[in-house]
Image (cartoon, rainbow, N blue to C red; front, top):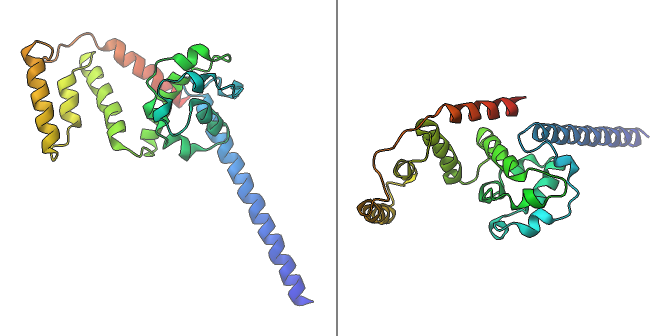
Length: 206
Protein backbone atom coordinates (compact mmCIF):
# COMPACT_ATOMS: atom_id res chain seq x y z
CA UNK A 1 0.00 0.00 0.00
CA UNK A 2 2.79 2.37 0.97
CA UNK A 3 4.79 1.45 -2.14
CA UNK A 4 1.74 2.17 -4.32
CA UNK A 5 1.32 5.55 -2.65
CA UNK A 6 4.99 6.43 -3.21
CA UNK A 7 4.73 5.35 -6.84
CA UNK A 8 1.63 7.53 -7.27
CA UNK A 9 3.44 10.53 -5.74
CA UNK A 10 6.42 9.94 -8.03
CA UNK A 11 4.18 9.82 -11.13
CA UNK A 12 2.46 12.99 -9.97
CA UNK A 13 5.78 14.83 -9.57
CA UNK A 14 6.95 13.60 -12.99
CA UNK A 15 3.74 14.87 -14.60
CA UNK A 16 4.12 18.24 -12.87
CA UNK A 17 7.73 18.50 -14.04
CA UNK A 18 6.73 17.75 -17.63
CA UNK A 19 3.93 20.33 -17.47
CA UNK A 20 6.39 22.91 -16.13
CA UNK A 21 8.89 22.12 -18.93
CA UNK A 22 6.16 22.47 -21.56
CA UNK A 23 5.14 25.80 -20.02
CA UNK A 24 8.74 27.04 -20.07
CA UNK A 25 9.14 25.95 -23.71
CA UNK A 26 5.95 27.79 -24.66
CA UNK A 27 7.13 30.96 -22.92
CA UNK A 28 10.56 30.72 -24.59
CA UNK A 29 8.88 30.23 -27.98
CA UNK A 30 6.61 33.23 -27.45
CA UNK A 31 9.56 35.36 -26.33
CA UNK A 32 11.55 34.59 -29.49
CA UNK A 33 8.59 35.22 -31.79
CA UNK A 34 7.93 38.50 -29.96
CA UNK A 35 11.61 39.50 -30.33
CA UNK A 36 11.61 38.79 -34.05
CA UNK A 37 8.36 40.66 -34.75
CA UNK A 38 9.98 43.77 -33.24
CA UNK A 39 13.04 43.48 -35.48
CA UNK A 40 13.34 45.38 -38.79
CA UNK A 41 11.92 42.97 -41.38
CA UNK A 42 10.14 40.75 -38.86
CA UNK A 43 6.94 42.76 -38.52
CA UNK A 44 4.87 40.43 -40.75
CA UNK A 45 6.30 36.96 -40.08
CA UNK A 46 3.06 35.84 -38.41
CA UNK A 47 1.23 36.55 -41.67
CA UNK A 48 3.34 34.02 -43.62
CA UNK A 49 1.07 31.39 -45.27
CA UNK A 50 3.94 28.99 -46.15
CA UNK A 51 3.15 29.17 -49.88
CA UNK A 52 6.78 28.56 -50.87
CA UNK A 53 7.10 31.49 -53.28
CA UNK A 54 10.24 32.66 -51.49
CA UNK A 55 11.89 29.23 -51.54
CA UNK A 56 10.90 28.58 -55.15
CA UNK A 57 12.52 31.77 -56.45
CA UNK A 58 15.60 31.96 -54.19
CA UNK A 59 18.83 31.79 -56.28
CA UNK A 60 20.93 30.95 -53.21
CA UNK A 61 18.80 28.14 -51.79
CA UNK A 62 21.11 25.40 -53.10
CA UNK A 63 23.70 26.53 -50.54
CA UNK A 64 21.29 26.95 -47.60
CA UNK A 65 20.61 24.44 -44.84
CA UNK A 66 17.00 25.71 -44.52
CA UNK A 67 14.85 27.46 -47.11
CA UNK A 68 13.51 30.98 -46.43
CA UNK A 69 10.06 29.44 -45.88
CA UNK A 70 11.47 26.99 -43.34
CA UNK A 71 13.26 29.78 -41.46
CA UNK A 72 9.97 31.66 -41.05
CA UNK A 73 8.28 28.46 -39.79
CA UNK A 74 11.15 27.77 -37.38
CA UNK A 75 10.86 31.31 -35.99
CA UNK A 76 7.14 30.76 -35.41
CA UNK A 77 7.99 27.50 -33.62
CA UNK A 78 10.45 29.31 -31.36
CA UNK A 79 13.53 27.45 -32.65
CA UNK A 80 15.88 30.26 -31.69
CA UNK A 81 19.17 28.38 -31.55
CA UNK A 82 18.56 26.56 -34.84
CA UNK A 83 17.60 29.77 -36.65
CA UNK A 84 20.50 31.88 -35.36
CA UNK A 85 23.10 29.17 -36.00
CA UNK A 86 21.84 28.32 -39.50
CA UNK A 87 23.85 29.08 -42.63
CA UNK A 88 20.75 30.46 -44.38
CA UNK A 89 20.90 33.86 -42.69
CA UNK A 90 24.48 34.28 -44.00
CA UNK A 91 24.06 32.70 -47.45
CA UNK A 92 21.14 35.00 -48.31
CA UNK A 93 22.38 37.43 -50.98
CA UNK A 94 19.72 40.06 -50.18
CA UNK A 95 18.58 40.08 -53.82
CA UNK A 96 14.95 40.73 -52.79
CA UNK A 97 13.51 38.06 -55.12
CA UNK A 98 11.62 36.56 -52.18
CA UNK A 99 10.33 39.93 -50.98
CA UNK A 100 8.99 40.89 -54.41
CA UNK A 101 7.17 37.55 -54.80
CA UNK A 102 5.76 37.26 -51.27
CA UNK A 103 1.94 37.67 -51.29
CA UNK A 104 2.08 38.77 -47.64
CA UNK A 105 4.89 41.32 -48.11
CA UNK A 106 7.26 39.67 -45.62
CA UNK A 107 10.55 41.60 -45.84
CA UNK A 108 12.82 38.56 -45.67
CA UNK A 109 16.12 40.25 -46.73
CA UNK A 110 15.86 42.90 -44.02
CA UNK A 111 14.95 40.18 -41.51
CA UNK A 112 18.11 38.26 -42.50
CA UNK A 113 20.24 41.29 -41.64
CA UNK A 114 18.51 41.61 -38.27
CA UNK A 115 19.02 37.89 -37.54
CA UNK A 116 22.71 38.17 -38.44
CA UNK A 117 23.16 40.97 -35.92
CA UNK A 118 21.32 38.97 -33.27
CA UNK A 119 23.35 35.81 -34.00
CA UNK A 120 26.57 37.78 -33.50
CA UNK A 121 25.34 39.31 -30.23
CA UNK A 122 24.23 35.92 -28.90
CA UNK A 123 27.45 34.20 -30.08
CA UNK A 124 25.57 31.57 -32.09
CA UNK A 125 27.50 31.93 -35.37
CA UNK A 126 29.13 28.63 -36.34
CA UNK A 127 31.56 30.07 -38.90
CA UNK A 128 33.49 33.05 -37.52
CA UNK A 129 34.55 34.12 -41.04
CA UNK A 130 30.95 35.08 -41.84
CA UNK A 131 30.45 37.13 -38.70
CA UNK A 132 33.88 38.75 -39.08
CA UNK A 133 33.08 39.77 -42.68
CA UNK A 134 29.79 41.26 -41.51
CA UNK A 135 31.50 43.10 -38.66
CA UNK A 136 34.48 44.44 -40.65
CA UNK A 137 32.34 45.40 -43.64
CA UNK A 138 30.23 47.74 -41.53
CA UNK A 139 33.27 49.03 -39.61
CA UNK A 140 34.91 50.11 -42.88
CA UNK A 141 31.73 51.59 -44.38
CA UNK A 142 31.12 53.47 -41.13
CA UNK A 143 34.71 54.74 -41.21
CA UNK A 144 34.92 55.88 -44.86
CA UNK A 145 31.30 56.04 -46.00
CA UNK A 146 32.10 53.39 -48.62
CA UNK A 147 33.85 50.04 -48.97
CA UNK A 148 37.66 49.87 -49.10
CA UNK A 149 38.43 46.37 -50.38
CA UNK A 150 42.16 46.17 -49.49
CA UNK A 151 41.46 46.94 -45.84
CA UNK A 152 38.68 44.34 -45.71
CA UNK A 153 40.94 41.67 -47.23
CA UNK A 154 43.76 42.46 -44.80
CA UNK A 155 41.37 42.13 -41.85
CA UNK A 156 40.02 38.79 -43.09
CA UNK A 157 43.25 37.17 -44.29
CA UNK A 158 44.67 34.27 -42.33
CA UNK A 159 48.36 35.17 -42.00
CA UNK A 160 49.21 31.51 -41.36
CA UNK A 161 47.86 30.50 -44.79
CA UNK A 162 50.84 31.15 -47.09
CA UNK A 163 49.02 30.00 -50.24
CA UNK A 164 46.15 32.43 -49.63
CA UNK A 165 48.58 35.29 -48.89
CA UNK A 166 50.51 34.73 -52.15
CA UNK A 167 47.34 34.35 -54.19
CA UNK A 168 45.84 37.60 -52.87
CA UNK A 169 49.15 39.44 -53.25
CA UNK A 170 49.43 38.47 -56.95
CA UNK A 171 45.77 39.34 -57.57
CA UNK A 172 46.13 42.67 -55.76
CA UNK A 173 49.23 43.56 -57.78
CA UNK A 174 47.46 42.88 -61.09
CA UNK A 175 44.46 45.00 -60.04
CA UNK A 176 46.75 47.80 -58.83
CA UNK A 177 48.59 47.90 -62.18
CA UNK A 178 45.38 48.46 -64.15
CA UNK A 179 44.04 51.03 -61.69
CA UNK A 180 41.31 48.85 -60.19
CA UNK A 181 42.75 48.80 -56.68
CA UNK A 182 43.47 51.90 -54.61
CA UNK A 183 45.63 51.49 -51.52
CA UNK A 184 44.46 54.75 -49.97
CA UNK A 185 40.78 54.87 -49.07
CA UNK A 186 38.70 57.75 -50.39
CA UNK A 187 36.55 59.07 -47.57
CA UNK A 188 33.09 60.48 -48.19
CA UNK A 189 30.38 61.87 -45.89
CA UNK A 190 29.69 59.22 -43.23
CA UNK A 191 26.95 60.84 -41.14
CA UNK A 192 24.23 59.13 -43.20
CA UNK A 193 25.77 55.72 -42.42
CA UNK A 194 25.82 56.47 -38.69
CA UNK A 195 22.21 57.66 -38.75
CA UNK A 196 21.08 54.44 -40.47
CA UNK A 197 22.93 52.28 -37.93
CA UNK A 198 21.55 54.27 -35.00
CA UNK A 199 18.01 53.96 -36.32
CA UNK A 200 18.41 50.20 -36.88
CA UNK A 201 19.86 49.68 -33.39
CA UNK A 202 16.98 51.62 -31.83
CA UNK A 203 14.38 49.57 -33.73
CA UNK A 204 16.02 46.30 -32.62
CA UNK A 205 16.10 47.38 -28.98
CA UNK A 206 12.42 48.40 -28.92
